[in-house]
Image (cartoon, rainbow, N blue to C red; front, side):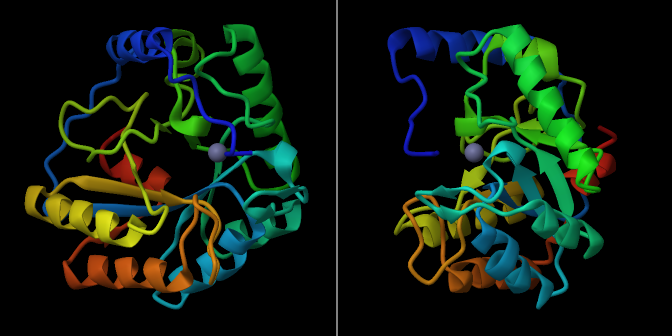
Amino acid sequence: MEAYSADRSLKGKLRRRLALLAHRRPVRMALERPMITFSFDDAPASAADAGARTLELRGIRGTWYISAGLAGRDGPMGVYATAEDARRLAAAGHEIACHTFSHLDCGQAGARAIADDVERNAEMLKAWGAGPAESFAYPYGDVSTAAKRVLGGRYRTLRTVQAGLVETGADANQLPSVGIEGPDGEAAALRWLDRAAQRKAWLILYTHDVAASPSPWGCTPEALGHLADAAKARGFDIVTAAEGARRLGL
Ligand SMILES: [Zn+2]
């Protein structure tokens, strides 16, 4: 699913730049301790298994942004998690959050198509017994003014894949996050973690599959564990996306 890449054209760049200015929900925050969220997009079954286990061993709860339309299907990151996986995660205290149902790209789709696809996903997660979802992630991180108009305010936070920290002035309808992906994923995430600790900011990390030989969009259980241990050692509050948002009054 992620093998598709979002619109890289000049028009796409302009659209994203315009979206930055539209339908904003500015964040105001003053944290005593830095905050971190571990999240998984789509999500592959391995994220629900090895990913969850890695966090649970450390007493941590994470957030899974699920595209219900992918459930049980096979993809370039392995087979996707099922309704049963989502229920188990929710029962263990993790957060089940919303992506689009079909992994629809909100950057390029029209307002009606976005609203319908997201509604379908939200309904399905509820039917699974894993809703209602409080947090949303844009597939491919791509966003448009129309997407923000339709979805902004419907969730506590909406997340892109634009690398950065959540600090005062960030837009709750278009939050940055940092990927644990590729060969440099762990090291890059660790640099952001140090920056977040220094600035008492909120770092939202995301990955996809969690496997010994991960796809280019995933990471190993060891990398995830190292980052979780680093967050603990640096005194981070480790929260789900919904809990982080509640702490910021979103
Ligand atoms: Zn995705």
